[in-house]
Picture 1 (tube, rainbow, N blue to C red):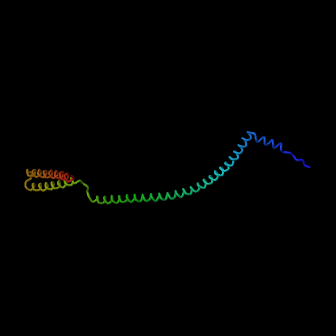
Picture 2 (picture 1 turned 120 degrees about the horizontal axis):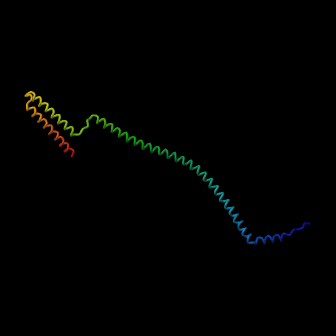
Length: 173
């Protein structure tokens, strides 16, 4: 027959170990450690899930950024082309207007009004002097009449020049 072994003494001893305050502290630490292990496992799962989501988000953003960059680049090119076309049109209009003014100006001599009137008066005075010289040569060569004619022609020229300057100043006002 088999003998039964009595474990009651060992059980009492084990119970007495449990009641020790140091063991209670260690059991509390074990409980906290097991709780920390569970929380760390949960945190690790969350971190892994977030890392997978981050990788997926980065892939999506790279594709999306490429699409945005292409779209933005196309819009910028269209806008730039529109601005350049307008600028080119304005430059072309100014060039055409300037060429037209140059062609028109090539037909004319540019001079102030005062200079023009002085030239006209000088021509009139010189032609009158020429006529006086011809008349004087016919009448008498080397007479005082020639000098009188020269004086009158000079007087006419001076009066005409002064009148041209005065009239141009009056017209400018």
